[in-house]
Amino acid sequence: MIPIGRGQRELIIGDRQTGKTAVATDTILNQKGQGVICVYVAIGQRASSVAQVVTTFHEEGAMEYTIVVAEMADSPATLQYLAPYTGAALAEYFMYRERHTLIIYDDLSKQAQAYRQMSLLLRRPPGREAYPGDVFYLHSRLLERAAKLNSLLGKGSMTALPIVETQSGDVSAYIPTNVISITDGQIFLSADLFNAGIQPAINVGISVSRVGSAAQIKAMKQVAGKSKLELAQFAE
Image (cartoon, rainbow, N blue to C red; front, side, top):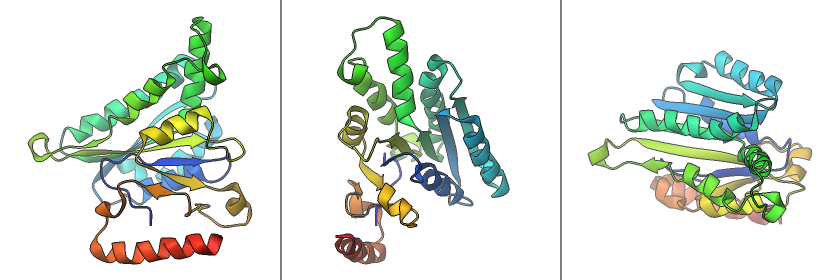
């Protein structure tokens, strides 16, 4: 219903504790046997949360094709800021060697906060929500590295699934709107659906993929279009 093509950037957005990381890690687990190299970047997460994710990868045999880059909540702001770029460099390495890669940034809200902390310590002029003026460039230069190479460059790809946390479902905040404008669509997770026991708590009505049906086979295209409409009408 929300198709993702190779080289696409699809945002996973929602409040805290709505299952964003679960959606991302399930995507990695489902790449088993597909020949896809996965990179999971944890930024500013609790050590226990990262350990739980790594344990799941080990139990499901996903560590055979997955690289984990982690800077915990107690890591310096500079390292939290650099972690996504480290993960992107690793994914690009395989992409330029004719491999398909998938990278998860969990999450870019924490990277933006680390960058804000660094900028304030450097006494740079604060802007909206105290973020520096170039915070949009911070994320655009990272996410624009996702690509699908042509045949001359080996046909490799790097697909990015960035995660952004919202406060009380407010997608109009500074960082969420920035990342939404950069990416090729978003998967919105609803706290109301999660609390109602619906998992994954994806709000189909406002989730979208700008690549759309171009990434689907004909049979899936016919089924998915009708199903998404019916789900959205049911939710209304």
